[in-house]
Every structure is written in C-alpha cells, then in structure tokens.
Length: 120
Image (tube, rainbow, N blue to C red):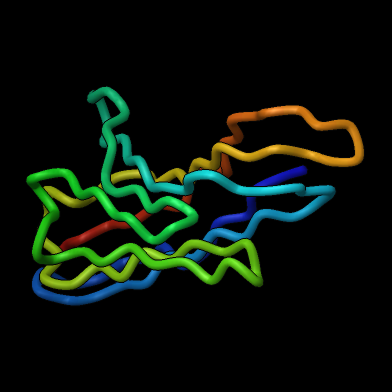
C-alpha cells in the first residue's frame, strides 16, 4: 500500500496549483486523507484533511484559499490551492489513515513530498 503525490511546481504569487494523491494497493477502507507541508527550516504542519464522509478541516493560514476534496472510488485526494503567496512555499506531503486487506491492519501512510514554490 502506498501513496503517490503529484502536481507541485513553480507558480507566481496569486497563482493556483492543484495537488493530487492516490492511494494504491490492498486497501479495505480509508478513514481520513490530508495534506501537510514543511517549509525549509520549519516543522511539518497540517494544511487540510478530509474524512471518508466528506468532513473537512483547514489550517487558519489556508482557509478560504485552499480546497481539499476526494474521489473515494479512486482513493484519491486533491488540494486546490488558489491565491498562493511565497509563504506557501514548501514540500507538500499527503497522508492517509487507512485499513488494509485481506488481513485487517490499520496504517498511517505518508506520500513522497511534492515541492510547491511560489515566486515571481
């Protein structure tokens, strides 16, 4: 079971990017998926999460600019980022709280980071 993230890149201030993260493998269920980020020299911080029922949570710093969504049929989570500013520059990591099959096992997985750089 693994998470594969994509969609990072270089964008100008005020621009937009969309990140995607797909979970693959022998997955029984996914409880929560989310995005975290880590800027150089800083600790990793929560950006947004979404539950399997569609409940969302956002960090204050991104609320109103970022939107998290998911496609449960594809085991994929998205992060639409609008109004980006240089403070959003970081490596973005997807995270999933899921259960595997055939042997039920609860796991917390991290995807590889995808770099988002906001600069003119």
